[in-house]
Structures are given as structure tokens and as C-alpha cells.
Image 1 (cartoon, rainbow, N blue to C red):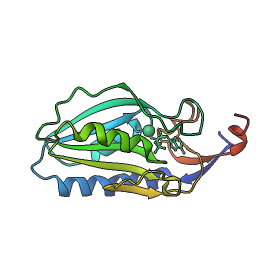
Image 2 (cartoon, rainbow, N blue to C red):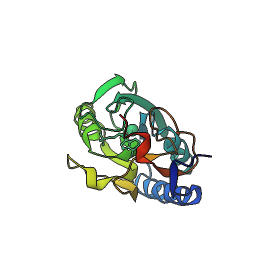
Image 3 (tube, rainbow, N blue to C red):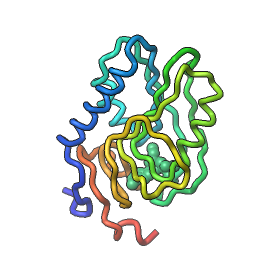
Length: 180
Ligand code: IMP
Ligand code: MG
């Protein structure tokens, strides 16, 4: 259906990766109040699958919206909160759920903001780690897969708002964005 997208991680591989992360969170957070805080829009598919695989009784879910990419494929380096979370973090174990960590700019900014809100703990969970692109060092507590320095789409990830609904993760042909 999309010849410009070369499959990289299959639906089945994603499923087992998500299950593995969910198991770790379940083991680590027994007896805790958890907040899964997801950065829109890219992480919405991952969060939906992850939340359903975590086996804990006290989970809250919220979203916040930041902008760092515009509609293109290059990170602008600036992070702006467009819509903030409304949950009170006090005494709760907050896990920021991200689709992909690229330069690390988005998360380092978010960590600074959320640490001030006194959560019991603050962790990062990322499905994909584009580690070769990192500009700011970030400790990722739960990571799904390391991925190459390519522009990826599918399973929530977009290019100019397209491809989020693909059930797998693939590499977008650079000819699509090289005219930018
Ligand atoms: P960072 O601030 O550079 O780490 O960028 C993080 C955000 O950029 C991610 O949460 C994604 O929304 C977006 N992003 C980074 N790499 C890709 C990619 O390969 N495909 C789609 N979105 C990406
Ligand atoms: Mg994102």
C-alpha cells in the first residue's frame, strides 16, 4: 500500500516488545500509584497498547502536547508545551511514555518541568531509541528497540501527520522529505 515505506519492525515484533516493557513496569511498581504520561501525538498507539499490558490496579493516564518538529522531519531543538497535564503528581510514580527519542531535547525539557512537581519518582519509557542522534544525554528507564538514524513512520509516528495508522514501523524513503 505504501511503497515509500520500507518495513523495519513488524506488528508481531512490536507486540512482544510492548509486552516485555509492560512486564518490567508491572514488576517494578507493585503497590504504587502510577501515572502514564504520554506525549502526543506520536505515542498514542504505544500508550494504548502498553497500558493494557501493565498489570497494576492503580494507573492514571494523561496526555500532554508539545511541539518540537513542526510538520517536517528535522527537530527544531525548541520544545513548547501546547497542552499541559492536569494530574497532581504528588506521591505518584510518573512514567513519561514516548514513541521515539531522537535528539533528546523534548525529554530533557519535560524532565526539568516535571521534576518540580514533586512526583514520588519520574521515569522515561520509550518504544524506540534513535541513539545516534542524541544531543542531550538522557537516562531511559524502559526502552523497546534501538533504531537506525532514519526517518521512521507508522505505529503512531508520522511524517507531516501521515502514516500514524500503519500497524508496523517502517523507514520513510528520503525522496519524500528531501524536497523540504
Ligand atoms: P527529540 O526531541 O529530538 O528527541 O524528538 C522527539 C520527538 O520527535 C519524538 O517524540 C517524535 O515525535 C519526533 N521524532 C523523532 N524522530 C522521528 C522519526 O524518525 N519519525 C517520526 N517522528 C520522529
Ligand atoms: Mg513524540
